[in-house]
Amino acid sequence: AREAYDGLAAAVVEATEGGRGAGAEGLRLVGADGDDGKPELTVLAANGEAVGGPISSFDLRLDCRCAECRSESSGLLKLDPSSVPAGVRPLRQAGVGNYALGVSWSDGHESVYTFRQLRAVAEGREFGARGGSFDPPR
Picture 1 (cartoon, helix red, strand yellow):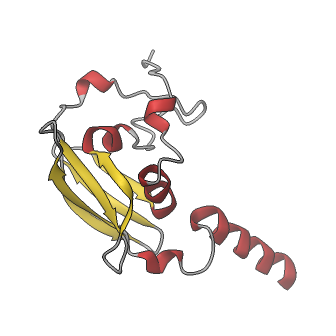
Picture 2 (cartoon, rainbow, N blue to C red):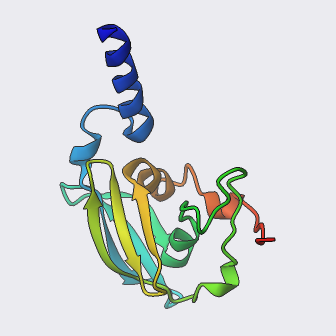
């Protein structure tokens, strides 16, 4: 039973953040205006180094994976992208446990992004909003 528990615990850690030390990443967002005047965000690690490239603030807002913004069964956007202001910006951010960053947006929404998700988006490996399509609520 102990071995099964240890295996399950290790799998949960791996699934949420890719293993040991992930919670110590302490990722945070730093904002600036891009060349087009729209807000851009940079993901910074605890050591102050940038992770990947800049992220459009608007695109990160659309990549929210909460049940209000995405269908839990299909993963498609429920959020109508035209309902999000082009100049949406994060107002506050705070760590969520050892695995995520909570963001309060200027459009009134609250999002939680796992460190794995932020790192993947900043490195251009994953982006749900661009790859997904809008699935309007029925």
